Length: 180
Image (tube, rainbow, N blue to C red; front, side):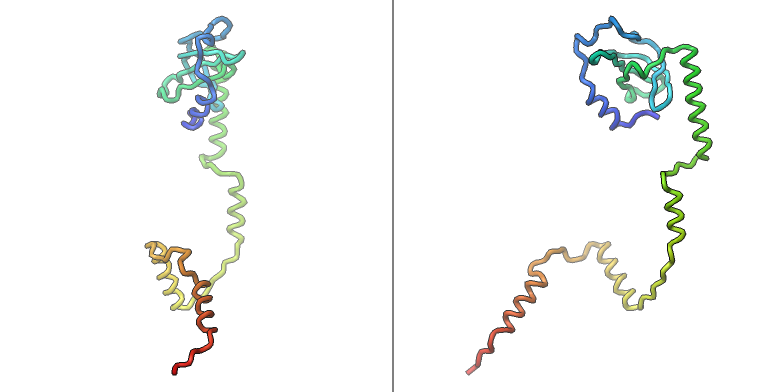
């Protein structure tokens, strides 16, 4: 499977652009426009070298995977490349056979680790039935409609409940004034 856009951006951002000094072709293993096999996500794919650069002591090659769109072209380290020969093709066939076996053994179902545990826990939960009076059901349904239509009052409000109660206590604690 080709790498995601995010992975390509991370690789592109991590690798500096080649300078003129980096393009010395003296000690590299592969040549420009050479066809070879490139390792990508555990599989070997036919690729062609479009560019090359030296990063530190190692070489990196900008490869185009044959039959893929140009957006999947990427910089690959020399260790991830194999010459296009009979021995490398055997390795490619072995890797694809392993992939087919692993897909066949999973029966096409992809499961996340712990899925079985989650299902067993869900099946052992006790079922609780609640009896809710009709008036409460109606009230809950109206509230649910208000939530979905976003007609609830935004909080916090001014004055708050606390402020209202404090002002009420203040006004009621004053001694009564006599009307004469």
